[in-house]
Length: 328
Image 1 (tube, rainbow, N blue to C red):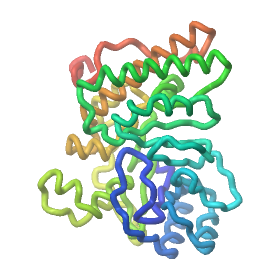
Image 2 (image 1 turned 30 degrees about the vertical axis):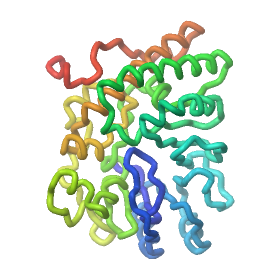
Image 3 (image 1 turned 90 degrees about the vertical axis):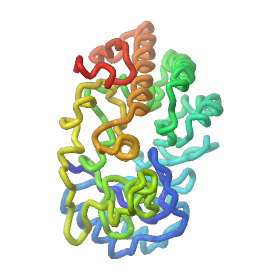
């Protein structure tokens, strides 16, 4: 069941997940389209999540935006001054920021940048905001990178353990989320959230809109340009083909996997496996490295004292569940 409506306020709205936004020309959503989007969200009882560009919007737009409860996603230090301070708002950075205004920070980096800036990033752990690491070149992650990633998370675990000993509760998605979960907590694009683009059409997530505007997916796969990646519009409503094929129940590997913190990005699925509901080797390996590091951290914390006794992360001997699919 849908819970969130993501509204891209401009073609240049900040990218906040795996997919970069290649669009550079401003294209502000028409204010009537924005109003209709809000009405759609209200009728469907959806929480509105606005994704902001890096320039200021007029008071006219801000007034419409603030006509309903919302969550804002905005570039680092570009938070609109509306007089509100929503703790659910999200700040997005593409390099390690000096200051963070929000309670939630998404840090988007390539894997090589993650390694080279690991010390700078670790200085963010002790702050009072949630840190979400988003690796933007998952498709380039190789088996040769596995040991590097494992060592990185081992080093960060030692830092996080020190913070727990000090009585702090740091939140780092790739290491602490799995410790708090007892079921899948994925992105669920197209299942519990849908995106409205400036053209008044719906997309499974912003990345599918970017692909339509640039024909990136079709070029990569040597297809003729697709006319439309949308799944409906404001005039006719949603029309998601075979919506069950986006759901966990129809993903044989994922529904048996316990890397509950995995984002299960359907855009990456489509890009790397040509199927929205089938994850790539890269995603599975990285997610299970995260999972195993979370298990190690949980066990170390429990040496200090009781912690999350209801959570059990069992030991596994694989990184890609496809390798043990017969057991599933």
